[in-house]
Length: 169
Image 1 (tube, helix red, strand yellow):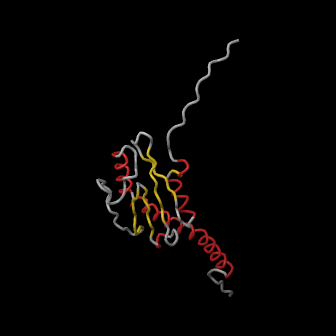
Image 2: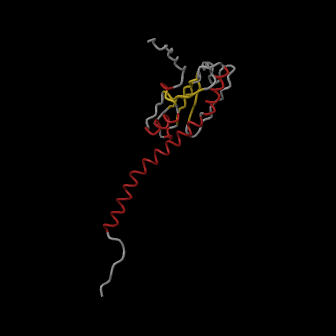
Image 3: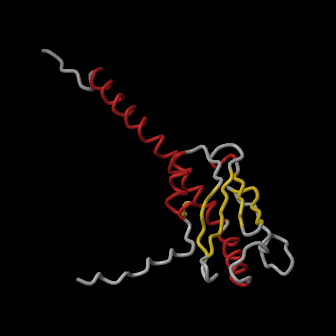
């Protein structure tokens, strides 16, 4: 009697290994981008207390940010406590500069600069990112989605064009 072998053939095993390799080649970079994006989200939320303090300072100073500096006279901007993602964050004339740790994955010595853009009445502040020295494209995409580009920061609205009366027939 002939005995039938049970199990997988070599070609079947090679096909499975190839499929797993292709999936891993796609999944690992996506997962790394996800991890970096989550760390940058933590960076952005860790400077929220400074953003709030600067916004209050700007509103109390009539829309002017020049007095809003950490340790400035009569200004309530707290000192920054380092986090797992940010080594230091300083406030100078309302501009917040956050220096990232190397473990974030954004590049060695990367910084994110948050610049306030108060509206003309000084009642609201929009934040723009400028001077971002980040080497990862996923990080710059995330920052662009969550912050107004510096060139597009709101400012005074342009004056409407004067209406011209229709010409008489």
